[in-house]
Length: 330
Image 1 (cartoon, rainbow, N blue to C red):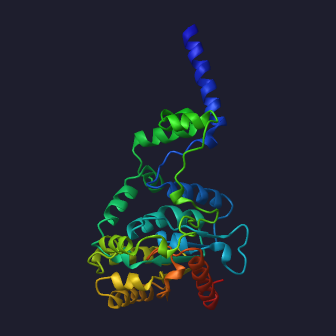
Image 2 (image 1 turned 60 degrees about the vertical axis):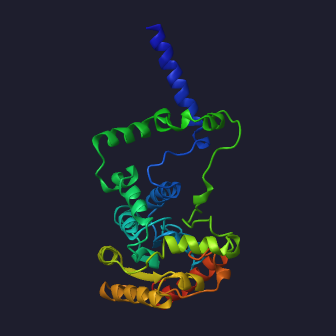
């Protein structure tokens, strides 16, 4: 009995210690990326304060480009604007994230759906992996309501006990050192997100930071590989727009701005971009949404061929703001 009592005391002290130093530990990843985990928590907090008046959804192109703090007039404190875009998001991911997380929790009046030509391309070899990781993640199963019994038990234990919540992380020496106040806390800064949801990691970037050949190879072998508009992708976009039409007052579909080189690297060049924009226009018209063509911008506004930098984010948000005011939505 004495040994048991000692063990209980040790566990209690450990629990108190881990709770006290939890800010020195990385949160367990219920979602495929640290960014989605961060935004899940941000959305939860924002929902508890009344949600958001306007949100943007989409992939990393939206994630980097939309800066809610630049919208005018100023956001109402209890219903601010929020960037709910997430990195490496296929249309299936954006649809799931919107239907089960962003829209029902934040209850926005206006949704800006930013889309890139990549998201309509069935030949991109990376998107199936991104989609599978998202659909099978614990986070998505939780918000969708189809956790297994074991996953439900595990989540509840994690909520009740800091020792259980951080059990995997505590086995790693670098985190044990952080727990004791020794050294820096290991962090993944590639998904840094500002309080309003905007992803910060692209903002300081410059187009010339990456060798052109490497950039071309990357985009040509992923986003633009054998580019075409896929039937499945069309259906997913249609499903998302139908959902938004039923749950949101106003929807603006935006073809995200790209660089001239992005156009050049697409197999069909400008004809691919024209076909992409025509598809977005058709789907917006058929689902009661408005459409905005982001256009082709000089490379000075970009961190790479598909993501804007800080200067580009300022221009994109100003363009978006002007369109929202023209439509009378803001």
